[in-house]
Length: 438
Image (tube, rainbow, N blue to C red; front, side, top):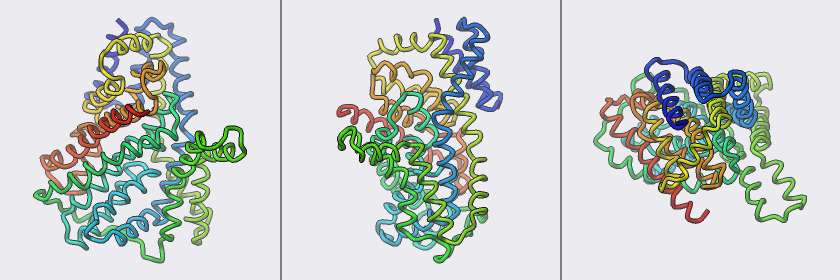
């Protein structure tokens, strides 16, 4: 019967968020408390469970997300993102301009939250399209496919980072597997799909045509921009490689594992950005710290949302519902990876938010990962893929794309929605294929 309570809880969550327009964090807390009470938990234990879930979840990822927001802000404000984009465009030329946009979106998207990356890079899309005379969607869709994939699949983004923490998955392996899965999803949903959109006439509205573009002297160097931006990936990647390539107990492995810990990697990358993208270019420490301080506001609600999902997860565990779900799902003939994708996709379609979909699904399918029914890292990726499925009218990203590219709702469905669906389905295919070897 507990499975019916979970279904009722999810329906209530959808009603609160979609129909009543109640903040997602408040909705999570309300549903968590009601779910615990109806499952027979004593009232004091329900509150304690919610508090424990919030504390445990935030304790694992608040530093990663906080440092990530600060790093992304410095990368954007310093002009490093623009430098990376212009350098890649120059290197690839007009003939291969789409691949330049793919790499730009991927490199910049790793440390930067999706909405920030969108706003920072869209002006460059408009500039490149105007300079080359190529269709706007031909230029923009490859870049946005990369941004979307990094948002859904790769740490240190909020959803994959938090889900990995909830499952106890290795963040380095999640990142490595995520990059492998990302490549076909980006290539097909980006450059190849965008070539089918030639008949859609996208034209940015006047307010977005003349954004501020930094001059050559105002931007940091190309290699400094690339290395600082990708430093978290490099440090975490070295730690992951050392875990099986360097002898256990050696000093080198100890050092690499320490600096490659996700928290340490993000902190070291942030400190590098403060110096190389700020102080070394003549910016004052006070100015840099103001910029860093302002970046925190962008993740406040994200952190609360993650906290609410952590409380929901803990109630499922403490009430015994998760064990019942494990037994039920364990008897299914479907792959746990496919089940996780389906649940995330359904919630995404209903709620609109990829983050809500991913975190809610993590709480539901936690037993599948905890009991070793599938790779924890691949479970993170399957949920990430499902959380991007079929973006439509209830997703903020849908409206950002529509307004910035000045499209009709019909054309936004034909372009943005199809692109997100391709990313989701191809991502699932990549995860299933990778599961044969992991």
